[in-house]
Length: 229
Image (cartoon, rainbow, N blue to C red; front, top):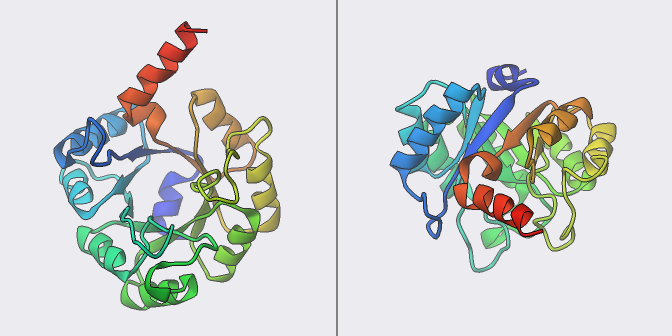
């Protein structure tokens, strides 16, 4: 098992991300957010972009799960879609690279299998995480040799719209766990500590929490919505 997986087993990973349209979009702010996450007990950080990751790694020693979100005109895949993003993440020194591992068509005719093969050849020491939205995609990711599988994209593909990882009984998470032996990480709409703990109890290897910790506009909205009921 890869070292970074040993470090996050049974623990919390905090996603520190802010896109260009969001109030906290700044590599400096994400670096400070990662420090706060470490002080709270996070075991690792998930982060977006070479710039943010370099800033984070300059502030803390926790392992980083890196992604690059980039839109391409010929594909709905936007999480680490091509070797361009892989190279950026490797240059940033990330310990694990996460990529879209769904069945959606990739930019420029690239295949997931081809991208994994190129990445393993170029960066054999970097762990790979498969961001999936269905059990079938998880099975395929295991076949391709990913080090771990994450439920990141449940509800974010056209064919899973409206679904959640953290539903009433974690049905999707449990189904994936029943069909693969690769470590499965629960990510997506983990809005409360209780849901994160329930995901671990359901069999998740680790839990990633983002917006409920690091996006204050989302946290504020949850409070406002509850008060307006």
